[in-house]
Length: 322
Image 1 (cartoon, rainbow, N blue to C red):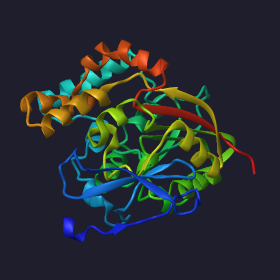
Image 2 (image 1 turned 90 degrees about the vertical axis):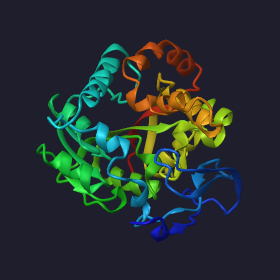
Image 3 (image 1 turned 180 degrees about the vertical axis):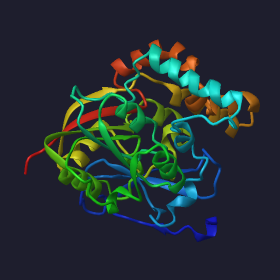
């Protein structure tokens, strides 16, 4: 697909608010430097921020190349063709996860059961959870990533959550790590997940935190803004409203103990100003390649998490009975 084939659409607030938006900022794709400028607006009624206009569902794939970070970083196994740096990168993430609890994939206290992961990418979380006794399946937008997960024996539906079929049986837990902000119709998707979950079931998700101190500080250079892939930009308050409309009630909000987005945003600022470009490049890749260095800045992440101002949230919600 070419940029000329990308179709932009404008959609109203998904909470049904009257059309009354204010402009917040305009930005571009910084992750892959693909063309296009995109506006973020805020609904004056509910406060929810969204990207508008946005690429349509059938042309959004232009901004998800096969080398998109989450597709590569969630591979279950390493082939012999991969180089030593890739091996060290994965090992570094393992060490960082072992040394710290950044709350990135925290789950509610449940016994193993049936789990559905939306946006499962290449399947690493499915694999780790299956090793703990869960029966797992996933939904993934990327054909390349879904194929990688299926190759390891996991049942993965290829397509968008909004159009996916129901799982074979009701699930006990739905997870989505940095996924809800990518969905074109989040309320539709949440209602569908609600219908697929048993009574009293759980939802565990993570999203960037637009109430973080980093958004006003960095503006359109905030790493977690991630335009145009991120279609919605949630605060704890607006996330609660969207979840409630989708049939879910928040039980706990965990502020992730991580400030890797701040490091990467500093890299973007340096790159924009054409300063220290080699350093800027390393900083922009810090969230993916930080490894043990992320563990070293973990104490500072804990401080900002206690202040409820880090750049990402992990939320546990329960299914509301109808």
